Length: 369
Image 1 (tube, one colour):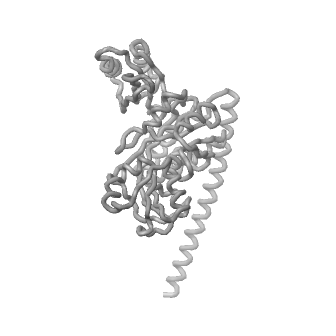
Image 2 (cartoon, one colour):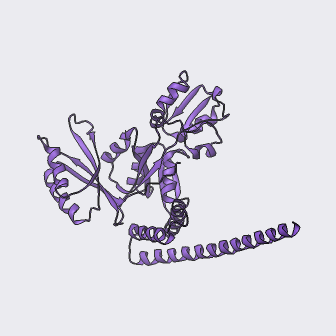
Image 3 (spheres, one colour):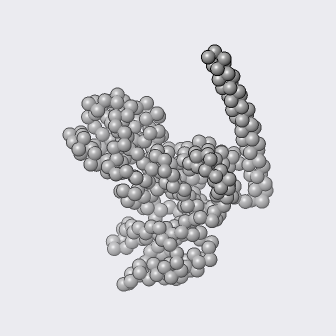
């Protein structure tokens, strides 16, 4: 028995030594990869080329998934390489990203999911201010929620697109799980529940059934709600998993959303859209002529060319009753021949035409945040 235990211990030490050797090799290769990325950044700077090449990144992911043959968990593989690739890319040029603050909002989570942990994140008080920061060049990028699978469009984001000249550079989907949190973790301490208006709406039925006598209050963000719960122990917040750690809160009840599969789509805004990735989306902002059938005629221009629309949304033009602008998302890149042709026709037939950007389609993850 003693010999068997000794043999097992020796085998364990041997495997651990192999792991240490592998880790040392991985670290050496990571440092080598970082140097290569920095060298590429210097070469691109000499040619005045964009640092970000979406097509190249997609080819890396596709090759890794193909060569993996399902042996390493695919979701984890993508997550690991996403952090490696973004870290190497950001080493070429540091990136500052504005999000709806304070810390630990769902917007903050979406930004980290998109850029990894190497970017410089700046919390901003309102969605409109994020647009202003990007438009005026104070930050390179902003990330803003644009639609939710349950509550629909985020109107403040759509309205900001009508005010500011920015481009959509990317998109990210975040699977939303809402937690009821407070300082003590005791439901009996809750005298007020605060959160952003969207999470409050997404948890309306649960709150009405479980805490019918506790009032709710809408605030600017889930991060602000978490901060309030930290400062006042009679307040509970509906907040993200990141907020629990950031503001030292306890979970009262996990997953209080009324419907599962709750997903928010975020878009990345900047001054310039990226080059083609091969799997892209394009967004437009259109105004229609004041005549019968104008919307049908506009959509027919796209339908005749087999352009696949993924979303269409109207918003009233402020100060002009009865006038609307239409936000349209479609598959493809604005440099694709079929889209070039369609856009020429749209500019002839629409009262207003603005290309909001072309950008890589997001990879939708199954993991909750």
